[in-house]
Image 1: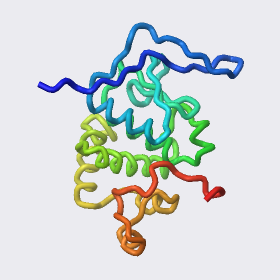
Image 2: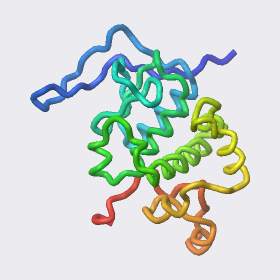
Image 3: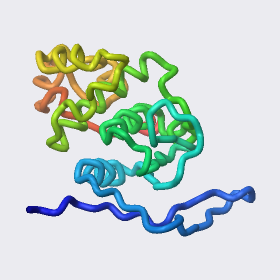
Image 4: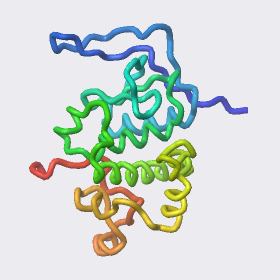
Length: 197
């Protein structure tokens, strides 16, 4: 039997009151045993998103996940669904770079951003070769996961026009014109700053 991949997190970076970074050993050695979670974390880090392991004492909208100053912090003991990491990362990914660095706490308050995060997380899930149920699990979306699964499976995607507008993907028509694959393929995983393009 193959052993699951393990992502090791025995150090975390914390910001002290003086604004300097300090490396602090986490109590004991925490390991992410789930191959799915390790795969997701690796992907997010490759994109340039920072992921840390730490105990989370704050109340969170998704168990075991807290975003502070653009950093995805996870508590391996409280994380219920690995796909929730993709959803929260989707919120960070669709923000402008300056907003991404400041993002903290509840990131689902903007309906347009919420839809883009859903679309982004689905695309990321497929890119990683994971089943859509990873993000659209039974406990998510206030009982609407089955509807999401059905709609996405039939090509009724959410937020493609918005993701295209911010330069992250292309619909079928524009993709054909540009010679690219259409959504759920992503042209960019992180929203660019339009002032530097």
